[in-house]
Length: 427
Ligand code: ATP
Ligand code: MG
Image (cartoon, rainbow, N blue to C red; front, side, top):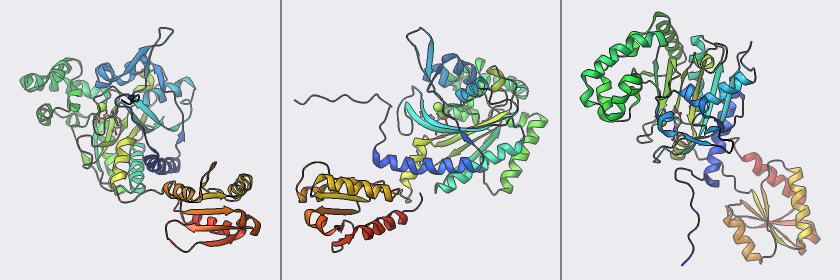
């Protein structure tokens, strides 16, 4: 019996080359749009002190209560694989003095880790692109950030996403609402699940975030935070709504939208798809004016969002706009001295930036080499035999069109490859 290979860890997935092509196309567009709005990339570590997440995300949240990959390292320090990017971004901003006298716009991307039940659209290692702006409290910033995400989805070719927005007001306005909410929940306690009952005392707002349909039903009639906004938050929200309307970005106000993390204030938003099953939220964000101070920095308003790349890629995989493959443009079939083929290939790569050329390595009959050329998806097979070498030509066979093969001089070959590279759309 064959030995069983070692399998991947549950919820940790491989991204295979065919899929990676879709990822790359998406990442390129995302970077371009973020840069168009003045965001600069920051690269953050994947491991942080556990305390960072407890203090930012909130002790009574799904993430901190049951989803974190937390362990002691060899020094006995408690460390955690980051479950999200904002906490680390704020930590880095404070630690490196990025938030003083400037209004940095930062973006990051990379894997996040949460010990959830793996299912469609829900992994234990998943990837996010996130962006944060610090030092700006104006409602225009909220609107611009949301409009930017709308542009992002447009440029990615995704038109079916719905935007939901809400305002969570300030911690002060939440305190009054909290009492009202607790009273309502007490009256309906028999319909709550165990999680919700526990949170009734510790963090009742969190219950709006429940995934349990029965609990969601109770929450649909619960007192709404939106009706208890302080005057400034209400004004702030009205400005955001006006600017979205002015920009032609459609939205729905969802008063039950609270987001799964504790640090949000005022504007929160989500982009939701109906084509992803239960895990429909592709992008989520909001304002977090208190977080920088809470983590030991000077009081600094901030707003940000995170985009789940697996869910985004799943949608792109469903759309008909397929990405450009990254198969080689050409495969060099070597029927001559290997050194001569090597030289030709290097010269072509020198002269043609962007060329993807694969050279047949080692031995191999002519037929076998052509089969490899076909299998790797190359558009052209370039055949270099002793006869071609002597005549300073290459035999070119188009593997897609089935056109008659022909012999080209080196200059003509270069021109042909140049044209093929130029034909490729930018993304
Ligand atoms: P959900 O309600 O789906 O659990 P969340 O509120 O926990 O999401 P956020 O912390 O706001 O998610 O993360 C932002 C985005 O990251 C989500 O909208 C989603 O696209 C993606 N995401 C979050 N958790 C996962 C996961 N376990 N697997 C894949 N993508 C995820
Ligand atoms: Mg979650």
